[in-house]
Image 1: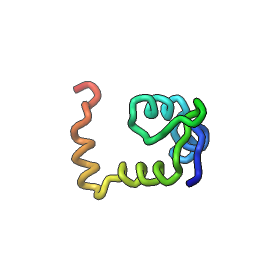
Image 2: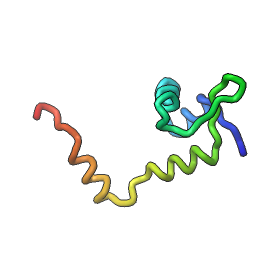
Image 3: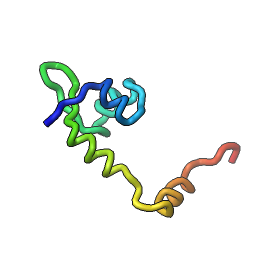
Amino acid sequence: MRLLTIKEVSEMIQAKPATIYQWAETGVIPCFKLNGLLRFSEDDILAWIKNCKKESYLEYNTLADRRPRKGG
């Protein structure tokens, strides 16, 4: 099992480190603390990314239609 740092995860998923810290704190992204340092299993992160994937354009489009529209 390869362990990743906040910086490595943020580069992998192209999100700000502050976002990764927030997701870790709220349990959105799988992580653990090792000697007080936040670490991520590469296998867990890859599985999490795969689980976040939408299966079809139709599913994505349906979710997009639920977003509030600007000025509406």
